[in-house]
Structure formats: structure tokens, C-alpha cells
Image (tube, rainbow, N blue to C red; front, side):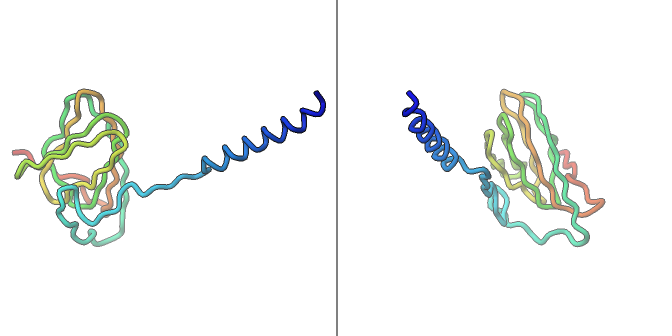
Length: 140
């Protein structure tokens, strides 16, 4: 039995080392890199002035919608859970995203987002300037 101990220890060490090598300590992926919104509209220049970054967590009840609005700054959203349906008011283009997907927001185009049949959680990143509104209401 004593002779098996070094062999067992060696096998456990190899298994542990192999497992550590297959799972990196840090995994980094670019989720979005684009110069246009989800509908293909190119982004214009960034707003002039001191940059101000805003990150917003949004929780939506099932089957709910934002009011029609537009953004005048670059923005992107990440769907944490649920489903997000984004619709452009003019032309009616839509895109549907599920958990783990990223959306480059429309810039200066009136749109709205709606949730599906489950609660939806989003993280939205905005790149503006101090005092600049994150969104502008565009009610009909």
C-alpha cells in the first residue's frame, strides 16, 4: 500500500495540472466592436467636450415597453436575462436579443425596446458628456 501512495499522488498532481491548464484564470472576449448601430446606420462623431460614461442597469417586467425615444450619444446594451425586442418607429425594423447578446443602440433614430414573456434585465452603456440626456422622449 505504501508503494501505491507516490503513484496515486503523482496521478492526482497530473490530473490537477491538466485541469488547471484547460480552464484559464482569465477569459476575455470582445462582446461588441462596431462603428454602426444594429440596423447598419453609421455612428457620427462623438459629442464634443469632457467625456462622461454612464452604465445603467434596467429591469423590465414581462411584456413591457419603453416609450418611444432616441439617443444622441453612442450607447450599447447587454441582455443579462430574458429577451429584448427593439423596434425602429420609422420603417418598423426589429431585432430580438436573448440573454448574453449585445446590441449597438440606434443613434438619433426613434425606437423602443420591449421585453418578452419573462422579466428582462439589461446593462446599458452610454458615452456622452456632462449634462447630456441619456435619452430624449419622442412620443407620437
